[in-house]
Image (cartoon, rainbow, N blue to C red; front, side, top):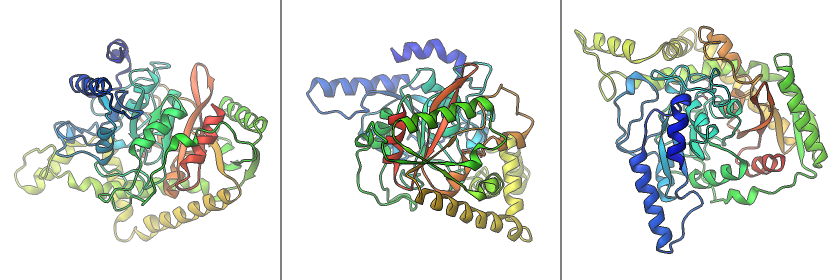
Length: 445
Ligand code: GLN
């Protein structure tokens, strides 16, 4: 049934870069066989999902929506894939994204445009736009994405689904092709909070193969699905509700705050003075790390190679042809802020600001259980609207990037509509306290 539905809507939405139906049918049949044999199956067994194309599956392409990796097949599985296999997962394919996860609209894909299922003239958000659109269009029940500065939460918001970016270290990054390693985290897209808990159960956990993975006791996140926020404290940081916020989005968020009051939560106004430096710090740190991570695409080890008259000429030709404009812009920004003479003025200062931002969060979260903010300043924009204005594109990330700088978990959940497009609310939790985040979101739903 899902494949038939996918065949109907996919030509319009274009969420997928690859179609995995033979494997999917095989995997589904294996689940049927288990059921017939009376074997226990996991909550996720046989439920169709999709995987962002920067997560490695053995023997399958992992293109990162880049010409550089157009023909690259991964020789190994990401840890999340190993875990999903143990849960008898079924994937319908790999999803479209901004090239190397750099972008906020999925327009930076080297291969195709993905359309927002709510309005095909609009972007699905990004960089995990394909995963968000796959779930929102009903092509799959769940999907994995990655979030370095909002790439799960913002597309979830634009597509009206639930998106979770867990605490840095909750989920292994082994086999996630790196963008900015100190910020990257794999996250989930689902239709509701209960499904979010189920997917999180399948993929969370310590992994010796990722040195930044956090040792943790196994948890059942379904136990967090408690329909009660009485007495809980929800912080509202004024800095997220400033001038740039669209009036309809503001109204929807104010209504959500009222709903929480009625449900018995206490609303706590908080102030986070360093949030205004978030975009500047993020767009120094993320490109700096990206420029280093992307140095491996040199035409030698793997990926595209364009021959040249000598090795340097080969490097130049390969990288000129293999990378798109946005990726090149990030490499230029990143190598510039890391170069001697500029390192102290840009990178080092951005790292100091990162600490101040983390401290703002620590202080605010001492006073409350979770924070409530918009996920984005507005709803999904028209395809092409920001294409030749990178700064406007970057500024749209104002509500999401600071969480990655602080390593904290965030969840986006739909809270209203404007002209037929969904509005997202972001809930931010304490480190490793996804359970509270899920509970607060579940009660709202
Ligand atoms: N939009 C942000 C960027 O372009 C975040 C991307 C992401 O989270 N992968 O860097």
